[in-house]
Image (cartoon, rainbow, N blue to C red; front, side, top):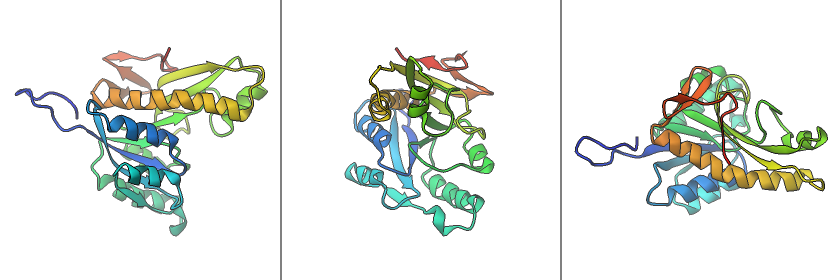
Length: 224
């Protein structure tokens, strides 16, 4: 990945494959970051399980190869995931990014990318695993809400947290307004976590994330 060789020449950048199912707002943050000269990773491909995902257009506009593999073309989850692994591995990724990829992943798929697959979840994990996180935070009367970048394990939204960021919940917030403010955080924190990985600073150590040789808190590093 992006380290210096003994002769001082930079080695190839960290190769990233991004999986999407929808509009790709987090994908856009990665594409924008990768377009800068000092980025530590390259987006090698964007793969979607939905042909009409707008994120595919974002990738094409950035000159990034795209691929579509519909889960509806397979008889079961296992066969789809096996085919997806082949598509992903054709790009020889160092890191797989889930950016709104709306599929429950099989254990074999997750194990194949153990320690090199990240997801972002719109809550301050372990709160509100699963869906409808913004409304659940409002219904609970929470004073803050946010997002968590985490390594992916077989437990849904349960892998070791890497990075968290929060916004205050305002009295007049709706699900939509709260979601918009959390998304602003996501677009900053997700590429940052990927950069740490690309620099060799971040890794999964058992049930914890490790940054610069030190175990992070079980809720991850807090982004101020």
